[in-house]
Structures are given as structure tokens and as C-alpha cells.
Image 1 (cartoon, rainbow, N blue to C red):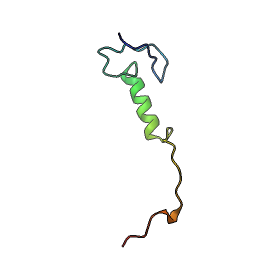
Image 2 (cartoon, rainbow, N blue to C red):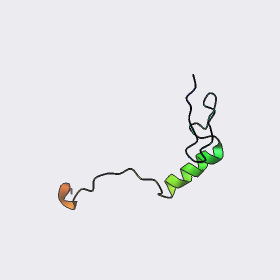
Image 3 (cartoon, helix red, strand yellow):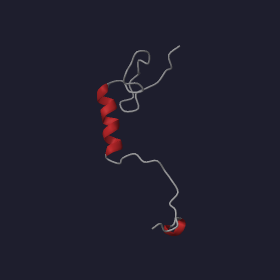
Length: 58
């Protein structure tokens, strides 16, 4: 059974089986998402370490 999902960009229902663009509905939405990553609109949160957390290397 195919999962019920919506495109993360346009929210339309996604045909899952045989869709090379999944989880997106189309190549256009896939490219919009890639552009958002490239532009820095998405980020993975992480803890900022202090500058002295790493030893000096020569």
C-alpha cells in the first residue's frame, strides 16, 4: 500500500509508486527545495562549540 503523503513544497497529494521525484510531486517542486537548501533557507541545528574546544594543530 502506498503511503498518503503531500508534497512538502506545494502540499498536493503525491503519487508514490513509480514517482522519481518523491517525496515531491514534480521536478519543479524538487528544484524549489534544492534551491532553498542552496540559499541557506534550511539548516540543521547544532550546538556551537567554543573556539578552544579543539586543540591547535601545526
